[in-house]
Image (cartoon, rainbow, N blue to C red; front, side, top):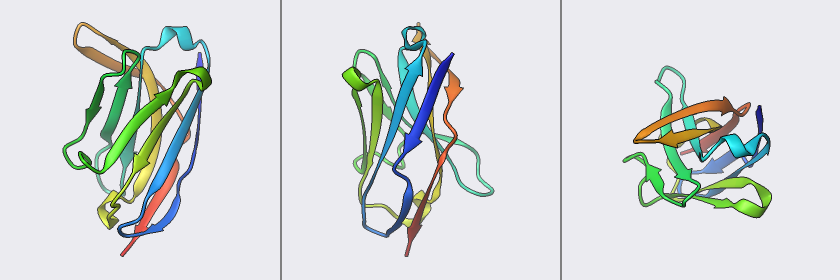
Length: 120
């Protein structure tokens, strides 16, 4: 099992920035990719960004150029730096971890979620 603990959500004005953190513990040898999902009320869950053990990243078109995912391997922690936030970024952001192999990515572990609210 892998445990994920998120932090860093909150309320910010449009144009502002926030950084989310996700610390992984447990059987981390079983995962090779981590990511951030978000879900706004009435909308489908969306994969915002992911980062593999090798460092390759993937972003949703809606956040490219504004969000940056990074990892600190020593701390088993993944970060999501969010800049130029807009009210459309308001959602519950959840950290996820899983494996990526042969072009397939599957997230098996989830954090509890953290609320990000962007005011206009």
